[in-house]
Structure formats: C-alpha cells, structure tokens
Image: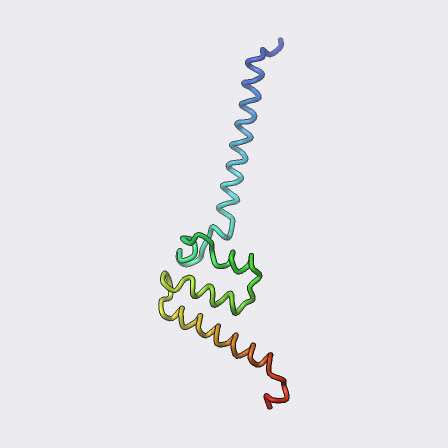
Length: 109
C-alpha cells in the first residue's frame, strides 16, 4: 500500500518539525552551558549589552588594561568606590611598569 501525496508531505513536515524541536532543545542546552550566560555571585555583568570579558577578548586587551576596564564597568553595580580604587591601582601599576620600560636600565640604579 503506497502513501498518498498528502500523507507523504505530512510525514516530511513532521520529521522537519521534530528536527527543528531537537535543534531548539540543543541550542537551549548549549545556551545554558555557555559560560557567557552564567555568572558566579551576582548579575553585575549579565545585565550589560556586552560583557567586559567579551570586549577585552575581542580587542586583545592585556591583563592590566582589562582589569581596569572590568572594575570601571562594574563599580556602580558591585563594588562602589572600592572598584574605582582597584581600577586606579591597575592604571597606576601600568603607568609604573610602562615608565620603567621606557627608561634605560642604567638610570634606574
């Protein structure tokens, strides 16, 4: 007994629908496991349009600059003035190390 045209289309649509459901389930599981969708201890980054780690990584920003960016981004929603002090500290460290790097070593003695 053969299938009618209508039932073949219906079976095809059912298979496609099930495949779409499977893809959706997989995407939802992947989204739940994606570290950018998770945050330990708070929501101070998750509510941003772009997380500092994404910006820092995409722009290949080194550690000290990235740390300052992180603290400057979150200070209002997490650490307050202490986060501004941490950002300032990283900037001061960077200035110190960059200043040393441009001064000939013979003048540092």
